[in-house]
Picture: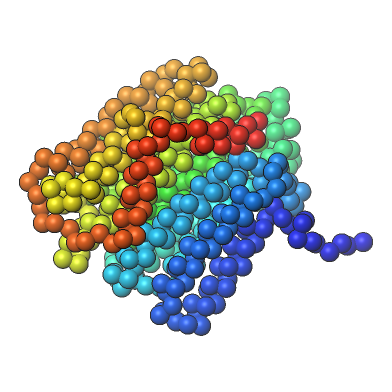
Length: 479
């Protein structure tokens, strides 16, 4: 006898249901009220993300599962959902003034960000290969659209097209890998795959794993599937670039970690080799390729590739301590990224956005507060103590050393030293070069995001316990 589904039965998916319903409602409001409602819809989108974040925090404790284990809510999912929602909401806050000044006010922007965020939430909670793929595609499709949302700009259109074509290729590779894994294990459920691979895996399953990881690497822009990142970051409208650099990275790393540790614990040695290679290659490329960049958005693209390499150092350890390091790293990375992009969005002169690093010349004399916070964020991205970025790297390197991955940790430290060069180069430009023409007044919302991100980044070392303990609990829920 069929029973009526009660609210209690779908409680684990309540935040997702509210987000989906809210996005549909805002779409109707925008369609009915027209383009004049754009700012109103985008502000409501921010409030909706705050409400959804509160619902995630208020979910019952422990591990919750729906749909036969396809949808899982545990401490790991809660931590990363809250972090990802902060990234999405921060991006929308950054975009409000930019969209109105650039005459790009479209109510669809906020709705597309909400739908992409819904896909990310599903991806973080995916408990099998089918839910993983559905979440990934729901996340990716809105991202392709907002990358090319500035239709009058050739670079934006090109960015959207490149992202779409390469994204479709990566989805095909991931789907092929998933089908191979299903074929060799007879199940799509992560727990079933773990049981089937408890005593090792054959060559066919390893091939499936490689293709699956190729899809993950594309989504987090890790080498060798990073090729889309610099062009898409440079061509997309700047708030969209900030979104790409923050929220989807969190969701991509989340499923990378969950799939590796939950579905393949019996063949850790096999996937560990892949992750170690990807991590080293990403750190090296991020360190060296950014050195010659003149455009700050392209530089941030290579920086994000390098940072994903550092985050994967923690996953390569294959331990709860390593996953804890990944979570701490991603939380700090999102804060640093939003703060840095608040500065990049403030680079406006005579009503025109400027993107070259040389445009920051002498910023310390024209806008000392902005120069100070940007310098602190750049030092943090470089991993200089006692700023927050140092602790992110400390935890992932410590996990790698405790797992016996000494070579990986040493290469990571060396890549961090090389990467510090281009961050320090920007600081040198701001403090020692002759001042360029001053930028326009920084909007209040950008000042707010920059101030919050900058202060948290500077004072993190005083009281890191809440983040560290939350990451520890979240990591243990996977093991």
